[in-house]
View 1 (cartoon, rainbow, N blue to C red):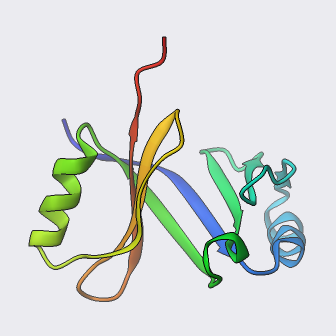
View 2 (view 1 turned 180 degrees about the vertical axis):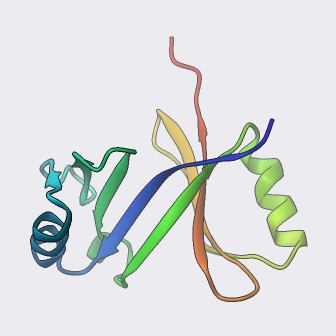
Length: 117
C-alpha cells in the first residue's frame, strides 16, 4: 500500500485569529474546540483540524498527515532515516498519531486508524 496524505492540521496559540484568517481566506468554518483544544475544520474539502497548541506546549504549525498501516513500524523507519519526534505517539481511542520533523526541519504527521467495533 502506498501511504496517503489525507489530512492536515493547523496548530496555533491563537485559535480565534487562525479561525478568522482561514475562514476569511478560504471560507472555512470550524467546529468548537473539544477538551484538549482540538476542533475540526469544516468545509475544507479534505479533512482537517485546528489545534490550540497551548495544550501541548505552544508553537505554530501547519502540517500534512500521512495515513499508514503500521504506525509503530513507520515511526521506527522514520527515525532510522533521521526524523526526530515532535509529539510522541498518541492513542486517542479512535486513531494513533505522532508528529515528526524530517532531517531538513519540516514538520509532518503520521496516523493510523484503529479498528472500530
